[in-house]
Length: 118
Image 1: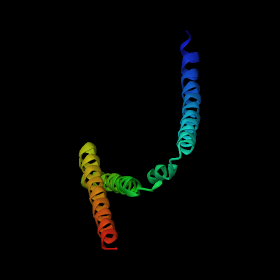
Image 2: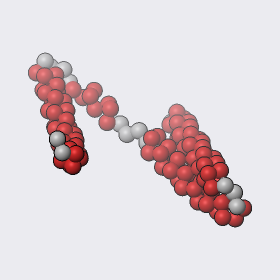
Image 3: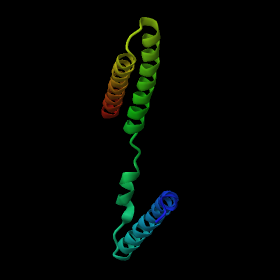
Image 4: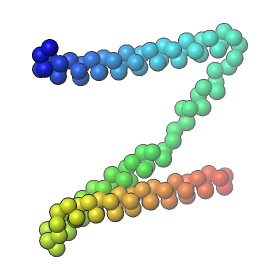
């Protein structure tokens, strides 16, 4: 088999497979709901998973913001103080990435505390 043909077909088959998987998941979810309705069970409790959890986007965004600031400060440190490139970038990347995750944790804990008070 020609390697160029294979290199073109893999992404195409992957995308088609992904869309077919989504279609079948939706079909089986609908079949399950219809079977529950036929047996007299209310399918309302399946909507519980629709509740939005904002902790992952908050964590990811603050981590990426911290990583970006770390890369920027690493670049400044490398140019200003003639540090080794790897040391400047990796140290600042990990420090600011950790600060971003710590800030996300503090924000989530404050949010949870406020929800418990209500």
